[in-house]
Image (cartoon, rainbow, N blue to C red):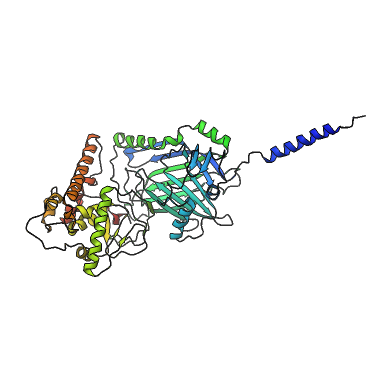
Length: 518
């Protein structure tokens, strides 16, 4: 006969059962809204044939729900191991590096504003993001961030590619599922789009040609327990015949090898397995750039001015650019000074001419009255450094493509000097034409500058001197490093390019300009 349990026995059983239930419901939950992705990244350059080069390396990234990220649901280890925003964390994401320079907005707010401008309101209800995190506050080079936007029923809607280059510039492509897609989608991919290149990523490529981008939806396959990632970019050269796209020049593939949930233990495991992965991106970029330049003998293209994200940017070909530039190099001290002087001058000229003058920024929807600036602050420096409005138009518009006037006649009228000419040139005007090709000195030059800035005589003289020194220093650095630029694209030869255009001999000194790529 079995003994009857005592009250103590029953109490012990009840305590153990209660403790077990409490521990079960307090167990760490595995989030299915955030994952570590172990990727394999492959790059292969196919053209020119004598410069073929390829490499493959591992990389880690995060695939996560941006909505849950910003609500704090993905914070791990009391936010010490992973969290959103600033603060001391092992791994983190913050909104500042992404999309636009609006530091006071979250990632979702930035994405929502950007997509609304592109005609996609209400597209951020369910957004997933593939990106590289910060580690101990260090933010490495992040070449590509991908956003997948889903409709309320879970159907894939938009794929947003955010591309960063090493100059600190950002470009965004918004691609819609089922719209402008390629007729033949490559095997193993869900979507594929072909579009013109608009962004300067590699110094060994011009900005001509096309991209063919193929992607998979991370959650499209029901045969895999965890999501998977694949993004393939084929870069095609500019077609030489009537073909839609040219020959394949470069291919890049990012594909996931393993995907695991973002948990405290997995954070420690992944960082132990790849302790330096997040620090090596820039080092790898520089290493392979050295190989391409000094071993494979590829020349360097100068960084072209970024194309503005404005529906009113029209090149001389008459084509409208719908480029996706969202972040550009910040203006330096000289550019800021030059802009202030240009704005002050235009304010005075608007009153004199009884007209309205508007400076249109790179992401404005308002058509220009006089000219539209690009995202490059150098256009204001060009105005300050040019001895006349005609010189500024020749180098800033025709040679460098830094701005496009709505009317050349109106531009010359607005920027014409408002003072009587004299026989001798001012000290600063003499400084401006010191290194001019002879043909440019035949264009009429007013005695003092058309912006009326020569009242700050020594300040402007010092700025002009610094600009000359920087051009010479840049040229000398390239010579000492035995680095080679594509003939005609050297930044210090802008006035030679302007002179060649003025003389009608542009073939001798060439540079990629805006209307060649839009």
